[in-house]
Length: 163
Image (cartoon, rainbow, N blue to C red; front, side, top):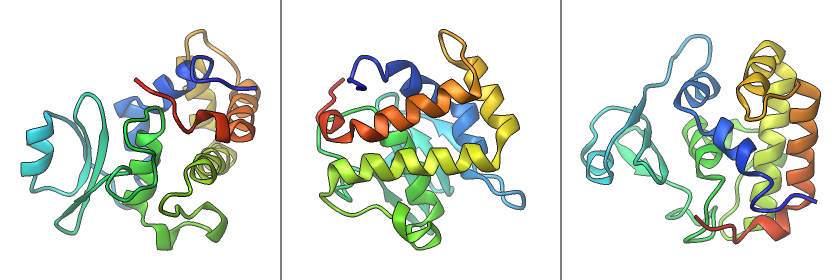
């Protein structure tokens, strides 16, 4: 069973700026990923993903959105905002129905986030191998998928993970 502590290496690697940039971009449209202050996020004019040092945001079509304001993630919790930001940026309507985020369905949204990554890794094995090697300690793609599946199965206990 995954816990808030045991998923930390997974969260760390999935939240790297390099990986987020790859995951949010399609082959035709690269997505800008910027690290800035929270004030910088609010004043941003360019579409892309923004990391304030503590939370991830998506800015698209002039709107800045995040997992707290959309109620995809329990307020004050941590660990999955980077994934939710990518999914928000891609657009709920562009995700498979079983991966679409739903307001206040916190545990199920964690499951959907893990399904999103499992699908991404299935479709992008080379990136999956690279990301597995970036984990501390380094792992394999197969073990990375097991960690995601374990986190998915433990979603209800991960809803309140804090900083």
